[in-house]
Length: 145
Image (tube, rainbow, N blue to C red):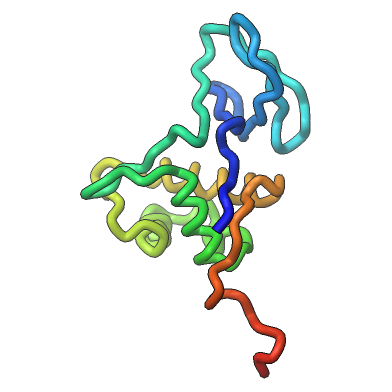
C-alpha cells in the first residue's frame, strides 16, 4: 500500500478546487491550482486547510481524509467515483456508507460527501492519488473472461 501525499494539497476559502502549495511566505502561501495550474498568493486573512489534516467524523473514531480517498480508490478500482457529486442526498449517503460504514450521519452532511467526491475525482485526474489496488482487485493475466 502506498501513500498519497496530501501534505501540500490545500483548500483555500472562497476559491473553488484544490491547490498544491509551492512555497510558504511570511503572510500566507503561494500555490497552483490542480485544475488550471494558475498561481495564487494567499494572505493571512484567508482560511487554508491542508487535506492531510482533515478528518471525517465516525461513530467511534474520526478517519483521515487520505484513508477515505484510499477506500474510494479501492471501491472504484482506481477509477473516478461512480456517483456524481450532484446526486441526491440519499444516493450520496448510500455511496458514502460503502466507503465508510461507520461515518456519523448526524455530523457528516451531504454537502461534505459531495465535496469529498469532487476532491477525489480532482485528485485522481491530477494524478495525486498514489495508491496500489488491493491484490484481489487486480485482474490477473491468466484470468479468463
